[in-house]
Amino acid sequence: MRTLFDCAVVGGGPAGAAAALTLARRGRRVLLLEKEPLPRVKPCGGGMPPSVFSLLGLAPIDGVVDRVHRLTFLYDGASPVSHELTEPLLMVDRARFDHFLVGTAGSAGAEVRDRTAVHSFSATGDHWAIGTSAGVFAVRRIVIADGGQGRCAAIAGFPSKRRTEGLAIACELPADRRRDELTVDLGLLPCGYLWLFPKGDRVSLGVGITKRDGNHLQLFDKMAVFAGRQGLPFDRSLCRGHRVAIWDGDRPLTRLDSFLLAGEAAFLADPLSAEGIRPAVRSGIAAGEAVDASLGGDATAFSRYEERMRRELGREFAIAARIAKFFFLFPALSYRAAFFHPRTTAIMNEVFLGRVAYSDLAGKVLSTLARAVTRMTS
Ligand SMILES: Cc1cc2nc3c(=O)[nH]c(=O)nc-3n(C[C@H](O)[C@H](O)[C@H](O)COP(=O)(O)OP(=O)(O)OC[C@H]3O[C@@H](n4cnc5c(N)ncnc54)[C@H](O)[C@@H]3O)c2cc1C
Image (cartoon, rainbow, N blue to C red; front, side, top):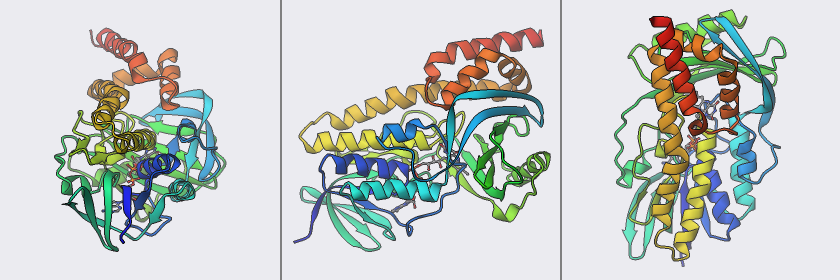
């Protein structure tokens, strides 16, 4: 007889791996389906706070290629402001990090199938038949964590309309020297920033924008300028990137008491920084917990998942979106106001580390920006 799985998780990124790990640890029969061969390559800066590992109850062992102790902001190559981080930010190699998480879920009991693309869901009595490139699987619940490019949410009947377009492009270049510093230039582009992250014997250089103005070619020109200023040779052919499903308002995250969305499939990337790994892990864990509770007979588990994501992520992202909107409306003035204000930058560092929530500083940052901009423009 065909195995009936308690839950299928679609996607082997951080959201899917976190959901599968959570369910496997609770003794649920879970199937993780990933369309690519593992380990799969993912274009990403790979910067994340150490709390990602602690959320998962894991030691930061695999995939970490660097630890960064200093953060420097620039505005169009000038006006540098640096801060020592109170705790190092981790730089991960995404192929290794994601593979480690999926492997950990597998060791905890999840059945992992790579090279298996999901293409359909059909209701069959009291369970679902999932159509894939490797056959049909019978499951009771489904966590969709197929990322910002995924189509499974739409196939399951979730509204897929994008209201905000984010885009990120990264390339890895050989490091010319040891850098213990994360550099972010906030003034080279409207509505975006460029980054340089050290990654062992390489660096990740990239660009993220929260609004697309139609001229993508200029992004490569800006990357070349930024690389040149950092003394690095730029090679456009090494660049990889895609749209980022940044949060643009709360959306339905569950359907038919069977489907849950997690990670970028749920548009859970930060609208200010485009950070997506930590929200993916947080939502993956919460989705796993909700499925476990629902399988145990809790009829409110799915609505509580939605409510939890709105409270823990949506509320924070709404504030991040306001800060981003304000900043990019008056970028030069905001940079001067915020980044030369030692307390603001110190607090922003704590936000990047995940130790302070946007809601703890929203009022302070926005009022500091507004006061300074008013002073400078009057
Ligand atoms: C250039 C770039 C740089 C970035 N830098 C950072 C950074 O420094 N820090 C940070 O926190 N975030 C960063 N992000 C964002 C971050 O990479 C994502 O938000 C994060 O990977 C989302 O995790 P996820 O698990 O939701 O989706 P993903 O990591 O995208 O995983 C989804 C998985 O689903 C699989 N899949 C898709 N469709 C199917 C299907 N039909 N069947 C089966 N499997 C399927 C995919 O192959 C993929 O493996 C960056 C993004 C980009 C594009």
